[in-house]
Amino acid sequence: SDPQKGEPVAPSETFGEFVTARSARLLRTAYLLTHDWALAEDLLQTALVRAWSVWGRIDAEPEPYVRKILVNAYASWWRRKWHQVEQPTSQLPERPTADELSRVDQRDQVWQAIGKLPRRQRTVLVLRYFEDMTEAQIADVMGTSVGTVKSQATKALAKLRLDESLTLEASHR
Image (cartoon, rainbow, N blue to C red; front, side, top):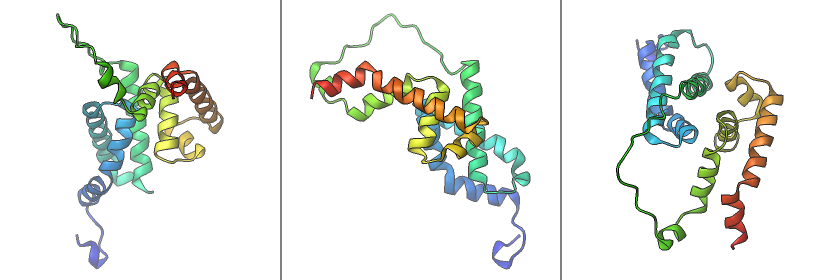
């Protein structure tokens, strides 16, 4: 099929173009959810495999649909907790020096605080503030109501305001 001649495009070609054009953005979303590049890549791959299996039935813009798959896969991973494999070790990690701690970026502290939030609250903040989605779009992606999105965002921001790692740092300046 030749898209320049107005003929239908084969699903695999369209899917390939989608993956090429949108993977970086979707990978960023996956990373913001997991805060781990390896898990983010696995999460994106899982979402893309699921999207490929229904690609021919996607009628609208595919990115929101694939993002919804990504968020749902993240939610189901979290429920299963298979991604939290801990490896015992006989040696403790080295303690960072004061100099190393002073180089820690405020952005990293915010990411650590976001990482402590419950999964749904973290998802709402990532989609709202990093993907610039509206509350209605977030509700659609998460399969919930706008009221729930607002509630989760309010709770998440309140927890961040109370997070001592953020408030102590701010008071030392």
